[in-house]
Length: 263
Image (cartoon, rainbow, N blue to C red):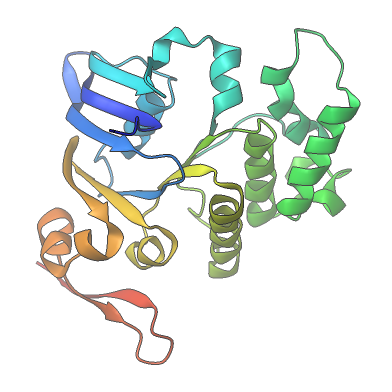
């Protein structure tokens, strides 16, 4: 018997002002996946996340969630199932860290309904998981970039989603914070079964963090499958225009991509 994927995109096209930014995207995301979304700048990664998360309706095609058309879920219902950590979160800079994370509970409450004991329990739990509980009384502008990213991740997790989209969560962070964020995400995927779709630029980190990858180029899906099979030297050359060596670190045995030259 065929298992219904958690999320499926069928012949999805997205156009803005007559220009297609996504073209005939067709692939499925199984429950429990840790999927890396990779591709050059402008390939359509952010647009794909918006469509797949139900933030934008596709111009053509259909997105289904657990077999249901995604657009049939209202905003709160969708928010209880799917969370998105966008590339440049713009809200909450005048709020305490605790209040920012608490905003993630909105799908679970009626309008103007105060937070209950269960809400506060979830908020504390996700703040401890992401390592920001000790920052709860701080204001966002006083935090470092890595600390802010962990706060925004906690806010997304406060929605208690089954599916989590992250758009470049490690962008502009030093390597320590990049690894911290990815370790938290990977642990949530493995221990809690949260399905994760992660847009990421660093191919080495994608190989190490993700089980599977989907590769976008010029709005089209170039390849999808197990990361170790898809991220080949040929693909890096064809999609990114770079001569590279894909292998394993001789000391640690972890996968890595070494860039040689621009083609």
